[in-house]
Length: 563
Image (cartoon, rainbow, N blue to C red; front, side):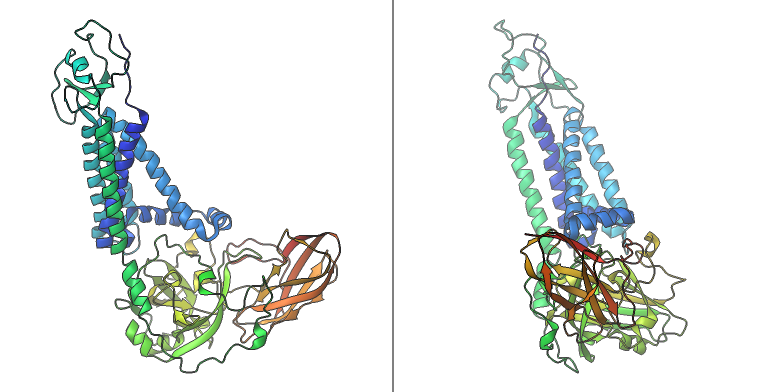
């Protein structure tokens, strides 16, 4: 007798993959109607980010850079695909196993959604809707693929005859499916043809694999998932917010800054420009899905230890005295010589002025700012109020803030790492104390206060480059926000330190270009180091420390080959 034959593995996996895609697409669609942040894939990803230990986070940023979020989401989707394929294989044996597996993943999604800041019961609707429709799709695909074996619609010739000798088929509903062989040979007395498709028993029923039914059903499922996903992205507000950003007319500052002095940019090819273009400005944050905040709906609430709570709309903010400031921002995740630093001309209103209107109480020492996606930063009150250009910014290099960089409004505080100051998509500021409240990164092992450390970087030549012998340019940038850079020194092969030539710096809140243009490079391998001295007289240390808990230190060192 012919041995039992299984349904092809690709077929059962395809059933699971299509069902999973339908669940994801429908959940994205419903999230677009309810709240984009309630999309369960993003909620799970955000939960993973929250639970990631600091060393692993640092590794991800070093390894993947600004693509770390894309890599995380891709990893989650790959895991979902693998599990969905496994659930498909389980479902063709017993539909209850597949449905139970989808239910478990629904519970994980619900738990992740409910852990997000500001979540409510309505936020679980996208997950429940996606899982529910995914279950229906799984049930439908299994029934479409495993049809009554005596159904003349089965796409394999000869199936009905072979199975008819074994018994009649009856549709008994979602019962356990079992692979069987015909109990008796065909009426001709011959053994079954090896090309006969698999036959499965469901209770007293015999069922056969219908390839055509599966493929047409899969096409329909993929179409549903795709249409739902595209509609969900459209409903998330990206197009609407992009149009609203394009309609923003930036007001003129009360005291426009003069044009940048000619000497601020040495204009050396390969050297970081003094002003970082918006498209090249670094982005490091925890937002897996960039918040889409319409300026017409945006409000900023200032409350807590204040005499007069304040609520501002975007229109209210634009009516205040507008300030323009050149400020360099730096991420605490920036390794020595790293890329997570940039300089821009920001436009906004004075954060200190808004706080004075609210009346900050004398015992307050912390501003707990909250982003539209629930992320928080803790900023020292005294730093914001000491006269520096701390802004609620809505413009960047002459344009409305890019959405990735906090549109419609973000904080900009010179001299502090971004994790304690540069809240994007800011919607709430609670005036409080460090001994009463903690911001996002503090309980994860990072310092509560993060002043930027005096550092420098070599941009030219690149580490590992091969350069010709002779006069060679060594150039880079140095920074000591709100102190200013007074000197930069370079040494080769641990020789004497030589003074580099400094570009102009309009304020102490920006980085400063430097160049050593007369290094006489000789053939061989050479090590180049750089260090900066700020306006307080402090010369950066050569001791290497990691970025946690309050920023890396050390001299940037590169090795080059001279041909």
